[in-house]
Image (cartoon, rainbow, N blue to C red; front, side, top):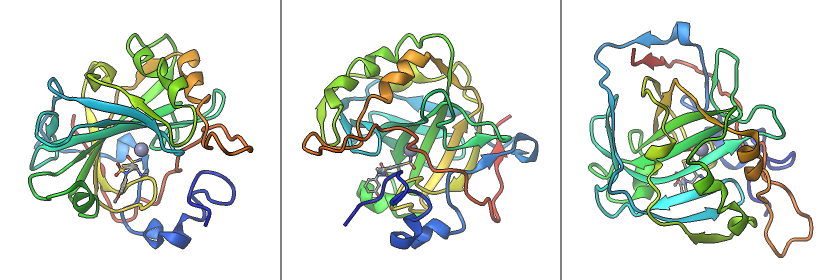
Length: 260
Ligand SMILES: CN[C@@H]1CN(c2cccc(OC)c2)S(=O)(=O)c2sc(S(N)(=O)=O)cc21
Ligand SMILES: [Zn+2]
């Protein structure tokens, strides 16, 4: 069986065959139209307590490059904003484009960014396991940060310097004591809406928090992500990992709220 991916044969346009929820009512990503977002004064500020976070490793799963965290306690959580509980940081990963073109999943008034960082958290107050939370309507919250190209990002090198060690699908290497706070923009103004995972199984279990302010990374730094391979070391047909993004899905009967 050829598993899902971003190619012609197994990409987003055919995911619905194995994952019918792909045509559901709260799919992600979406196009965000700022003028149509409703300002909600009751939305609190986002609170990120990542100071005691413990990253474990960095790995290439063939779809993206992922940094996993120890989520056995509440040492690194996101709370506030639209959330009723603290949500535990589980992993973060990226989506990016090909040379110089788009790559983000969410778009803002028709504009896409070069890349998008997703910090995935789960509701360990209400659910016993990540898998259970990932299938529940309020189980996950993903903090999305846009990356635009410009000057070099002063801390992203800590990730891009390790990418050569996870070149092949299925490879992983230790990646300890990385605090993702260094990847945040200077302000935490956001849009929020109810959506889904943007990859199979496409569960409609995500409270999305999309930061308005992008971070800036250099073309050179982004180029290192494109050196990653979506294929394993043993495969003779090498495929670069790029354009690993799903395009915006119908908003249907949803509203996007704005924090300011
Ligand atoms: C491959 N899919 C990613 C890995 N995940 C996964 C792995 C196993 C089971 C599962 O659901 C039961 C989900 S995940 O939940 O950490 C997420 S979140 C997400 S995104 N782009 O919407 O932020 C992509 C993935
Ligand atoms: Zn993602």
